Amino acid sequence: MSSNKHIHKPLHRAWWKECSVYQIWPASFKDSNDDGIGDIPGIVSKLDYIKKLGVDIIWLCPSYESPQVDMGYDISNYYKIDPRYGTVEDVERLIQGAHQRGMKLLMDLVVNHTSDQHEWFKQSRSSKDNEFRNWYIWKPARYDAQGNRHPPNNWVSHFQGSAWTWDEKTQEYYLHLYAEEQPDLNWEHPPVRKAVHDIMRFWLDKGCDGFRMDVINFISKDPRFPDAPVENPEQIWQWAYCHYANGPRLHEYLQDIGKILREYDAFSVGEMPYVRDPEEVLKAVRYDRNEINMIFQFDHVDIDHGPFDKFVPNPWKLTDLKKMFNSWQTFMYENDGWNALYWENHDQPRCIDRYTSAKPEYTTAAAKMLATVLALMSGTPFIYQGQELGMRNVPKEWGMDEYRDIDCLNHWKGHLAKDPENTEALQVYREQYQRKSRDNARTPMQWSAAAHAGFTSPTVTPWMSVNPNHKTINAEAQLSDPNSVFNYWRTVLGLRKRYLDIFVYGDFVMLDFANEQVFAYTRQFEDQQALVLCNWTDEPVVWDPTAHSVGKVQEVLLNSYGVSEKYQDKHWPLRPYEAAVLLVEPTS
Ligand code: GLC
Ligand code: CA
Image 1: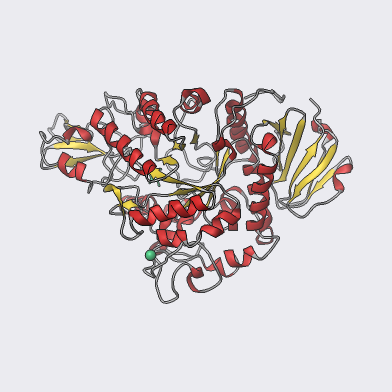
Image 2 (image 1 turned 180 degrees about the horizontal axis):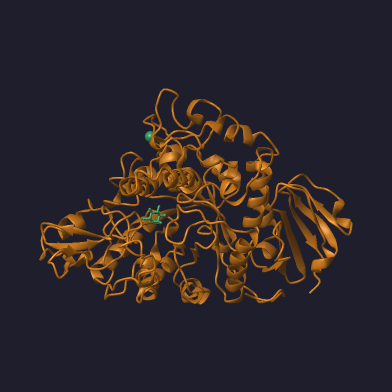
């Protein structure tokens, strides 16, 4: 971790550093044809809304043809759009509509694996000498002394069970780090890489402006496929990140991808779970490496996960969170890298519920505080649909029949099968699903107080229930309320743009590190300094600026409760979840 001191190094300027991104989960954004499923024409109809928020880029989650075992992260054809979402022409219209409004559009590039219904895999599994056999990862069985058949190694799948599935026909196992319907591609095989490059060019030629790259650090695996160390002796199948996260040929593959991206001056953000070594990340994102622009790291979203199982509770403190951010912020700044900033996405619960314990009367304040902390750090901010409204986790009363996601449902099935009598453990899991399941992010977008939140027609049953709190939390109400979370986000994103030098190119220094109630940092560019000061609690707190060498306040840029004059005194009172952004005289 770096010292509490300003380092002034000019960061490289780049358009993608100055942008902010809005993420869309197509199934839940807006249904245009009353079949209960969101679709691309629905997104087109809401482009003015997105523009109004003040973002520059839209990231469209997978909309390609897919059997939807994992909501489109199992692609059966990269050149077609799933009929439930529309057509390739609809995507072209979306790109056009975004461009007309000065926004860009990113596609999701899911190329660690395909669907088992992809033609490549159908061919691959058809026989051992099929020309596509090598496109996937096939291995012979292992046999024990009694002659019982076992998978080639002990790797666990992210969606429960072994990461290998036995194929009767060709008498070998294939690897799937996720569901068995999501076989992993074999990137060692040059035609696979060529096929991915072709997919990228196809969409870039259509005017798409770049990609979010799904688990991109998993594409290079240890070619020996060794057993993972047994860290959890209670399980047969073990986490094996050390053998496939940031593997031996990752940067070679990313260099090739980077060449294409540069040709089109395209945007890129790679999803990189389980990165242990920041130097490895730096190789992907350092400015002069020409691989990808930035990555999603997972430290702050794994903060409440149990050691082997995300659905096991894990308590944390504000200083744990501060430590994670501080190290990424300073590391990237000092090493000419770049951060992607996010609280939420389609895999994470809602941030008010995860990161605060705000009482109902303070949830709006908490949403504003989280917006401030995130968007004014060093990096490109990502906002997930509904986050701009302060949307919340699914209701505690919802039964398991309301949940849709394979991750949580497989977990539930697994424990029901293993330990059905242990009602206490099952109850704990139920509570954890409500806190951490991916379903929390996937409920339909809350457009209005009308039936089904205006997401689909009142007479239609949406694919997933709408959160009943849409009566109070919805876009229509927030657009006309100057004090809404939506309008606050607009202000914060506007502020970031107005003081681009400070908030995009400035350094980051965390203040008052040990404080478990206040999250405070400065951003400084040359002789301009801004202080971001947030109360992370339900209680009023008092903060002493002089104890942290804060200079004289020059201007209040933003206060989440409305501007106040109180920053002249020696001690500053902060209201519950209050966020303030001040221009201050630099002291170092
Ligand atoms: C990524 C996606 C997630 C998906 C998984 C497999 O983590 O964000 O939604 O299930 O990859 O593609
Ligand atoms: Ca539809």
